[in-house]
Length: 258
Length: 289
Image (tube, rainbow over all chains, first blue to last red; front, side, top):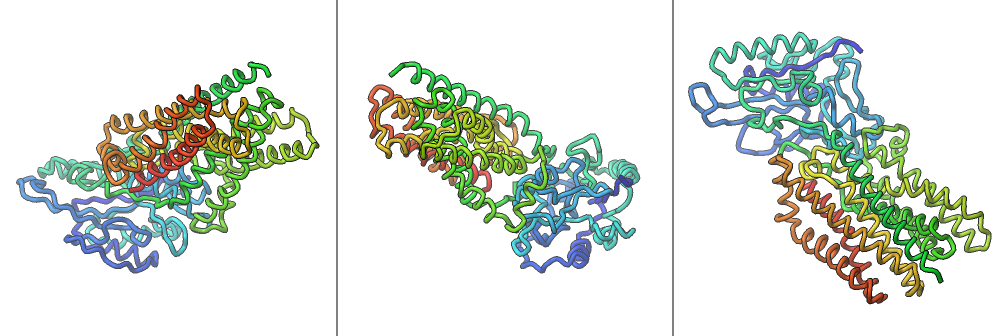
């Protein structure tokens, strides 16, 4: 495996211009969509089969160091989880990990069962009715295999989205958190930077200025497949009860004689 | 949580969960009847094996039609992924299909007076019973291994789906035997016992599921549970799936132990079939809401 690549989204630098969203649409030739009018600049409300980068606009009362309303901006994207729920759930092998550590969907293999859609802890994977397949951010798979960074990172005018080797970016991100804390942003924190943390670390990780839940992110996302063992044991227990019960029931009737 | 996406599986998938469970349950009961006393319980195993095959036939068709790219259905069994209950389920469906077909064929040969021996049917029955249990239970495990707050927040969905498979399997077999005029005898009375046993496990599993979601400590899961217990699906859940579909047939079944009334057995069986479908439907629907 090649050295792991990552995207680091520093939300403290985001100005909400959505150049990333536009660049993503253009490079990946994603369909036009009817906008959602939500009363904020955010479009769309959720990730869709044609929106892989999504700038979230969040208002947090009292969120600024001086107690003013904080206008939080976050360019959200597929997290390319180190332990990916979608990849584990995929029954066809269409979802795979590249040599750079990113997670991608092979559009020629996916048969559209939609299990990955339900298995993503971040609501990223979307179903496309036209192609009948699951879609999500590819980490610009074609670009990174040709020595280029993802289109969103390339387009970002403030370096809010940075692309590079994961270990280097994590070191950089840690320093940035310290700087921000020194400036009074007490809640400044990294999300998904720790490879030992949740979901084996995120290969698209974030610097947030508030709690993850403020951004609609789960505080401690869990790998869905962790339930399989316990639920299987309980199912075997249920099967034993049914099986043994049936054995006793039939034996009892069978033993009565004609 | 608004962040998550739903797979939007249609009601057809619930029909598959229902038929697959029924087929698995009927096959398991038929096999046990065959193993205990092949001659004495021939009616039971015969009806069970035929029913299992009939209930199974629509299953792969439903699954293929529901795919985004139906022509790629074979991709499901080009890979073996133990971390994906859907992958394991596809393999179990394949294995079960082979056994259900063989068991029905052997039964048919017996009917034609060309028995291939009890032992061959026993082997097919035992292997098929393993796959049958798997087919009945795996959809519950599949749902729990997602990020949907309702399904992932609680326990015993697999155990519940297996019990529903057994109860609906027994109910369908009882109705078939009654329909064939086998109103008395050990077959129907043993199926009555099976019905009561499976319903007990079914009710306990639902209770474990609801209580464990409530106590999961996840705000999203607790909120999702209200969709089932007090929201849009509350009436279907409490009245349809629980009261009329599980508790009433259990009470009827207990009364029926003494009365041994074909009418009562038939009524309980119909309620179990409707209730078994509703339990699966309502959990899938509320989890996707």
